[in-house]
Image 1: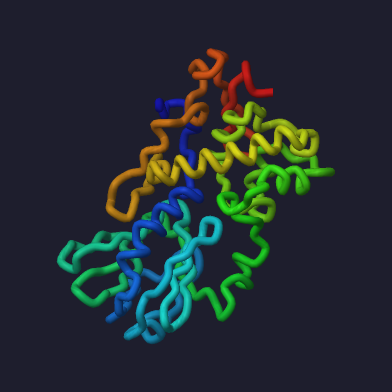
Image 2 (image 1 turned 60 degrees about the vertical axis):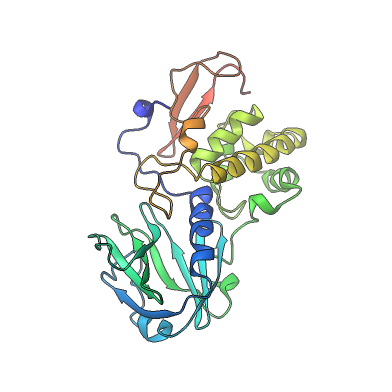
Length: 283
C-alpha cells in the first residue's frame, strides 16, 4: 500500500479488527491472574479514570475478556472494566522490569511479575467501570448487532436502510445500525461487493445488501487474521503492527489501477472522512 494518498493529518481510529486482535492477544494471558495492585499514572483520558480503581480491583482475579463493537470488557471477580482504545490506545502485557513509557497511563500489576499496561499517547481512550449490567451501560445499550455474529447480516442492513437517504458508507458507520464497522473496512467491503460507498443506502436492493453483508464479514475476518491495520499508532498486544494494510484494494490507493477491472481508484472526502472506490466496477 502507498499511504501518500491518505488525507493529510487523518486520524485513524482502531476499528473492530484491531480491538478483536487486542482481545485475543490478552484474554488467555490474563485469565485467572490475580491483580496485586493498580496504578493510575494519568487519570485524564476521555473520561476521568475512576479514583477507586486500585481499591476495587486489588486482590481480585481477571476472568473473561470480551468485546462489544469497538469496546473491550475485562471481567474480574470484583466487576467489569469497560475500555476503549480511542485514537491511539493499546493494551500490552509486559514483564515488570520493562521500563515504563511516558504514555503508560494505567498499569495492572499481576501475580508472577507481569503487568498489563494501557498506553495512549493521545489520551482519547477510556478506562472505566461497566456497571452491574454492561449491556445497559450508556455507551453500549444502543449499539447495533455484531457483524461477525449475524447469519443474515445483509437482510438486517437492507431492513434498516429502508426509507433512509444516507450515503452507504455513513450508514455502515452508524453504530446503531451495525456495531464496529469503521471507515477503512466499510470502503473495502463496498469494493468487494461492487457497490459505490456514496450510493444512497435506501436505494440499494436486497440482493446487493446480501452480497455486502458477506463482504463485510469476509473483510473483517481477514483483517482479524492479519492482526488489524496499522497506519498510525496501533500495535498488537505483542508490540507488532497489524498487517491488513498490505491487502487494501481501495483504501489509500487513489490514482492506482483497480485489481479487478483496471479502472481508476478515486478518493472523495465526505463528512471529513475519505471515500475510496473504483470508478469502473463499483456501481
